[in-house]
Length: 135
Image 1 (cartoon, rainbow, N blue to C red):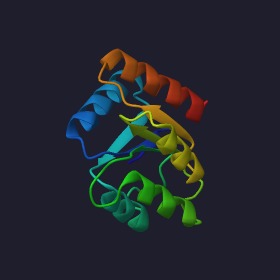
Image 2 (image 1 turned 90 degrees about the horizontal axis):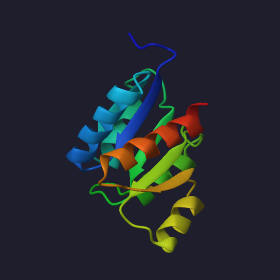
Image 3 (image 1 turned 180 degrees about the horizontal axis):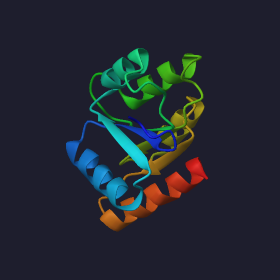
Image 4 (image 1 turned 60 degrees about the vertical axis):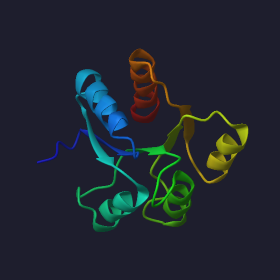
């Protein structure tokens, strides 16, 4: 049974190492959050369409460059659907390109975060995001 006070966060990223890192960080520092990981946008939309968790996520962490449906396509589909448009989406990518940042904001992302290979920086950025989104 899902704890109703538990925050549900979807991670959409084709990098399994990112899944593991984020799972480790959230299990260590944010036990009141439940992460569910998807390898691409198609898996995310299967989950959302069928409401397999019985509720919508409180936040989506979205990689920009993925196969099947990339982050731009996912943002477009999320923001066009009246059931999903209000879900906060934070784009996470390796790029710091102004054009990518602007395009993501134009498509409705709530924030844009550059991925870090440093564990401490990643943990700190997830803590800051969690604080911004859930407090």
